[in-house]
Image (cartoon, rainbow over all chains, first blue to last red; front, top):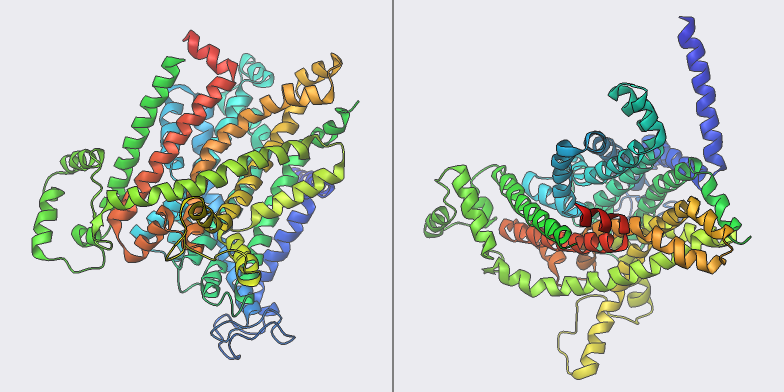
Length: 295
Length: 325
């Protein structure tokens, strides 16, 4: 078993190297830190919250104070506590829906992009069919048909965002299969499997990681919209659902709307900054080229 | 070129037909009594039940029902709203122009400003300028549509009292002519501004990335070696080549813009198709929901045809290859 050991050692040093490169980009490191902090705050919510998400003990509609740093809501709950617990469902929807979208969209995009011809024609028609409809419309439609329990919501969001993933992966495969190194691999008689997984995929990976990260942020935004419209699972506290509650008290209690909105904004920003960092990391010349134009 | 156009039209019509078929199939999945689902949460009189059963051929086989449904849709018969007590087509015809106005203006502003910011951000020799634009764009991109609207309402309507909070005009208006137009415009400012902010951030992101990619191409190096000025390179080579991928994104982001209408119109109580959709989901008025979905699909398909044509016109590779085939 000496081989796995040496393998894992080289792998950790490689991932450490990737991390170092990510932190050298403009925003990548910030994005990763935001994601880790926000996830940790939600995952360990009981440690940071003063009360449970359903504890109604405090006086209602109190402005931010030392005791309630983010105020209390119309039901007398500590907004900070609800916010921390609500992050769990919002982030879970983000991660799970993005993963699901990647599995569906990535597979379809890769198959269409590599095989082209009739396969691509059929797969792209299906993708177009779904992509024709805006994500929020698909989600609203499926929620109105199937109901809005938590996992149905995740599935609805994934169903709405996979076409983007398919398009991006398809685009990558189309460009990359034209490249010299793929032509060379073909000419050398390497197998289709080898070409897809060892030649094309590693080169498409940065773009794919970026897209998955962006998908997660889209999913969080869609959930927020659904919650805001009062159509998310009413039994699960989420940031969108908090905003729905806050809308009624916009003039009386701005803190009920502003803080959940900020939480959404920060989480989405985390995913987007991370995506931006990865883009820059694998395209290092991009930022160095602009000044040269002056010469 | 003509063949290229015709091909795209045919594809678009097929796409729309398949959207309708997909929706029809999804509707079959609703559990429970289809007539009850069609009518919504309202009691169904036996006479109506019988007429609906006959009209939707509920006792006929699947394919025949599908055919009947397609024929109805193609004749503009999208059903009857039990919630509004009007034909769905009439409601849509009244509300769609409003949404189109809101989304169209915001979308146009957003694209123009976004492209400008993207280019500026990518070609600026000052790192701090790029950083400032990129940070602003990233923050704008992360904000939920409706939350931006709410913040604008808090600041400009509730706090400063400059602009109306909601609706698309006063209950009673005495203004006429240009005054009437200006009055209407004040109601549009906040929703359009929200739209513009979001569309700008989306376009600026893509444009910046696209310009940076273009700058790496060999022909830019060649242009520089030919001694072209910075301005000539950017206007003549960079912008044109960078806009191509952004145009594709624009086509699809029109759909997102239409989707954004759903939330934005709810925030501003703007009576377009977006708020219609939300009201109908709440009232379980399925016929209207389906009508809105089909309408939005149509508008996105039309927009994509426009984008395809624009793309073909701008990209000589497509123009030439379609002429040869």
